[in-house]
Image (cartoon, rainbow, N blue to C red; front, side):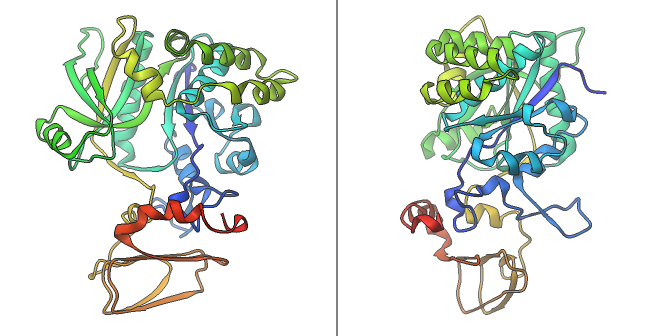
Amino acid sequence: MTSKHRYAMIMAGGSGTRLWPMSRTSRPKQLIPFIESGRQSDGKRKSLLQISGERLEGLVAKDRRLVCASCSYAKDVIAAIDGLTQNNFLGEPVGRDTLNAVGFAAAVLAARDPDAIFAVLTSDHIIEPQSVFAQKVDLGFRLVEADPSRIVTFSITPTFPATAYGYVEQGDPISDPAEKFDGSFRAKRFVEKPDLARATEYFKSGSFGWNSGMFIFHARTVLDAIGWFQPASAVGLKKIGAAWGKPGAEKVVEDVYPLLTKISVDYGLMEPAARDERIKICAVPMPVSWRDVGSWPSYGEVLTADADGNRASARVMHTESKKMVVVSDDPAHLIATIGVEGLVVVHTKDATLICRADMAEKVKDLAGQVAPELR
């Protein structure tokens, strides 16, 4: 039985342009049913958002799960999350980065439940095993339930010295004779995307983890913190929270939200909070397989490779080809290759992408240059 004051908000506001041509303005990556779930027996694919919602089973009741995403995706988002209601869909008229998505949820929940504690989760990761994820999130909830001044961040145990992620340094262990908080630490500092030399140093030290972008907050604590560090945004968020669930709430969001300062939760909240004695930042290391499905090569990592390193979510035939990633939204369409290596091939009904895997980061630029009807 989960606590009645536990909630979760899934951030689903990304555009996913690096996964063009399958990810489009009308259907971003988190809504594409292109993940083959090992827990399914019917062979159907799921979207990243569906998987994110299912990840909360046993942790947060269905009627206390919220999603923050663009207003234009409301119908598809509500359909993707089992039990999601219109009142739990936080529709953004424009994207204002992650701090305001967090503040939006905090304002709505604080008005609904003064004791609300909520997890902030992402919608673009594959996290396994589920049992470890659930255990660590439960620990995070218990830390904040015991002390509402705590903010919990989850750090992923690094597998290599990545320069594309932020890092969290572990401080002293958190101990309490009356509670079992084993596996939690004070967060010593946050470092945004270090160079390779520093990333290698952090990786070897064993005391740093990748910043997962997942958190647990007491709603009132995070609203207080936004008031201290981003006071202009706090005023607008308070107006939205007061109006939510009442007639005219949509108009208040449309008028106020675009005026909020665009800033990430890391820069706008976590970094200054780590230097503020009024808040206790806690780190919970999460030793899981954590894959950021943000590009075609990273998507390929969720697929099983054959003997030649070829990965496919399509009907394929390879002759002397190696290390290919092939994707199609048409299961009847055959994609055949001969003697090529290290390419990404993505087929859709109106566009086909072919690129070297090591140049996949440029897909985002290409997506911005194609005709508007293909974006």
